[in-house]
Image (cartoon, rainbow, N blue to C red; front, side, top):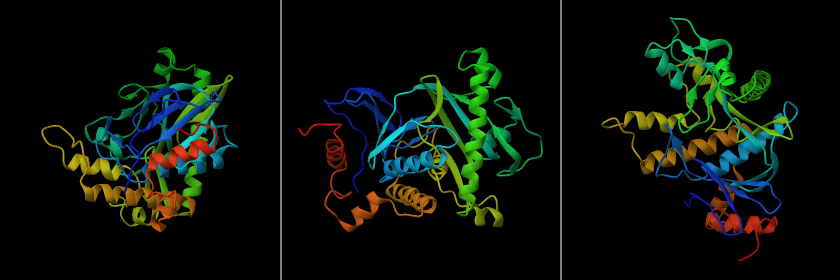
Length: 316
């Protein structure tokens, strides 16, 4: 299966290369975001790309942005390819708003080590792994080379945001999480935790980046959790994280995944897309059918063709 690991073109000035996304300047002045199949875990990009991962993230982000536009405006202009989205240029706020409903993942690892206060939120002794909190909590981090836990008060004192802006981000984050939790519960999925990123456009707070995807969120199967909270099926990137932890040697995580882990990770990305949207991923569906211009075609060639069709690039 072919993957899209990066994208660049002499016609489109580069803006930023993140761990997963490549951003380019479109002729309109808007931002073109290419969501690649790269996978980042523990602040490092792995050597192994995951087939269809970028298309899953891009498609799910578009799905959720449309579902939540009544709560807060977002940066989406249009989807131009399975792996590409044209968005409005906003001034990013360098804060990740992390919302948690369960004690798991990195928070559980910190809790096991004796930590009780997370980004200014103190939780009691005696909690168990994967236990639900009485209500969702906010544990923001900074967006730096390595994300850093930080209290709302320190976010303000260090100049990341004003108190008014943080309060608005917090209110919107909890509203987005509540809606996401409700819609996913109807599909038998638990939204365990997630992150939201915001920006300013003409002084207005808007939602940017991605939302409720397997990279930005943790999902569990509700039936599995009810049967045994410790063995609930993970429908997200945590599957890869756990494999990396289990195969850590001499303090170092593996740089690459095995073919079996890669295939299973791809299957999980495709599965959560179908569970959430109720449809199979179009890029994967056409690839299996062997349709012209599908995933059997080089992913970059397909992307270029769609950018030309959208008037963002000229034919070479």
